[in-house]
Image (cartoon, rainbow, N blue to C red; front, side, top):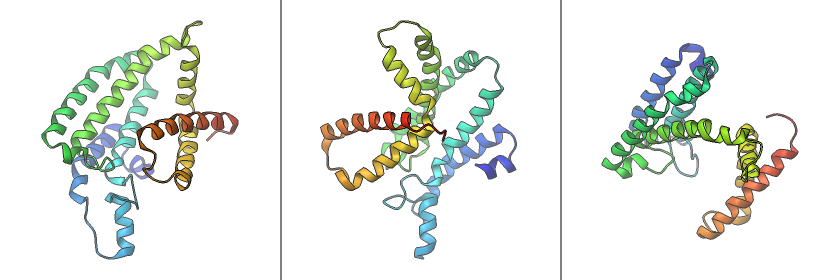
Length: 213
């Protein structure tokens, strides 16, 4: 990301690179050299399986789009107007992504870790709608002095503000807990229970960690 930002100064350039990655990435999936040390590197670039779950291609798409949106967000004097503007494009992306995905569901959904263009477009539209929804409705609820859902809203807003800290703690807990619970061993009920437990454990641990990360 630092290299891209250094070489390409304008956000529109980052978007072009992101879209290019979205379409080009599937070409490289599964490409190996046959040389183990080299393939270790290639697996992180576009591989799948136990050695890497989030390969650079095509997951680099999302931070590039996020970085471009962040610049626009910081430059905007009216965030409400900005989020209102992304509503219709987000709905369009969601619809287009859905249509593309159903034409070849197996390819576009893939193994999740390597999603085709249809799924990437769909996810982008969903994120846009989620941001719009949060800005339009959640923020309004939060400013209310009294609401029966105040505690739940405070919880959501805290997790939103402390996203980076929560993310790091959450993944450390999940990764090390695999040694205790195993992989795909709990079934639906056990998984849902563990999701709830880990969410609140992450929350309380993040509250105890005072320094900013």
